[in-house]
Image 1 (cartoon, rainbow, N blue to C red):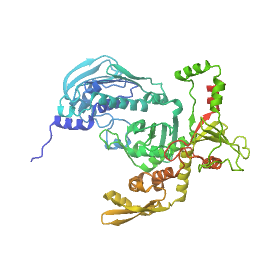
Image 2 (image 1 turned 60 degrees about the vertical axis):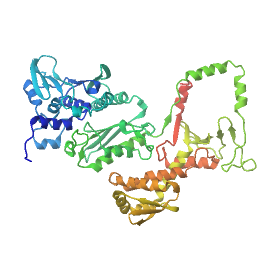
Image 3 (image 1 turned 120 degrees about the vertical axis):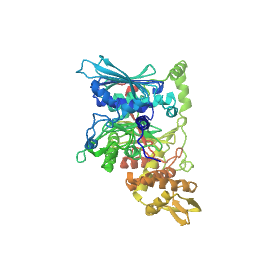
Image 4 (image 1 turned 45 degrees about the horizontal axis):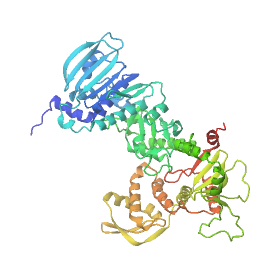
Length: 593
């Protein structure tokens, strides 16, 4: 077969396959051009998810008629002029592919005018071919209208997603631009309805709440970190560990204001939370990484969604430290009382008020005192050294007399509520502690300090077949696994697992062993000792006291004392250990301000 040069239209359509991956990618390329043109207002409009119509208009610098004619040709750009420019990029676009490739697979109308010119130019193209041109005397800036995307490549058009999905993906792209460009106003219209109309004066925090309306101002924690020696700066906002979602769609990371979708960065962000994130939950985050342009390569991905760093480890560490520092500075989780009772509660209260003897009757029914059983289920009644606490039978609340007075200003132990929460008074208000989460975290810290976990022999050894990658991970990390309590022997192409960590149920032997091997895949992204935290957390969870386990006075008090000495705020799986109901919030609720 002879080697031959491909026809121009074929080359353009092949290029379009990399640039035009969906309606969202067209919007992305056009908006990036507007930002590079220093626009202060950008209008985006789509119909039918962008399949039928896309319009991006800006008030940027615009192009002269001559430049506009050049701009629709392949690989023409004003962003770079030499190969060296690729190593110090400060613009979004630089390849000169967007306009020509989009035009090659659509019907396009593009209008542009410079502020200093009396007239601009309007071009109409079909399938990349110029159909007509005419003078334009309207506002300065550029307007690009795209009709019938992929109309001349029906095989590719059928692979576009549904109108709803394409529209959602466009909306997500617009959200990213809104967040990463707080100095630009954006208007976004979808099928004739205005979705966003954002002023350039709106702050980043306001824009985050616009994109994620489920967040409140108090949910957002500002992060700020800089490393002058490396030129790395991290800024933005993250949420507290209790404000999460089931996927990473709430995590938005920008490198030099360019949105990137890169697992290493998301992982570093999440590791910044340490053990405070519950497994399977992900925070909301809008994080900006600023580095020297020469330290990042943005030309490794067709849609520029991934980048390559010259100092990856330092950037990952910077992201992690920035998040960790912000979380630790915020401190305790808080509960705010509901400001007003619900309609149903109000009606119930009205009903009660009509009963003249309501208070006497409810008090008589509610407050019944009885001796408490010990944690082993036997009565304390015959114990001469024990003074009976009172229990409100209906509410399951226990209060204890302290043996010695607490110092003023120190947390003051009150009692146990519902066989699951320990109540403590502190200078700020009432601290409610989850006994299971607290004990779980304390055990987790103890396991980490011990370094080595006692092994238990399996009654029935487990036979496993490992793929090549897992087998290599097992061989390279055998000493670490032994320290965790795993013991095994090889038999041909199989592994015979003979022992597991002492606190892990034998029924979960295979699952835990395979999970820890998968954790070892992340060796390059995290310091080795952190790779075992998930396993240690699982062990601690299974060994900790459970909800419903009745603690003795001494056990509950010791748990509180241990928490104070460790200064912990969350269990290893991310659930909060304690919640604070502040005096200020309670005063507001009862109108005492």
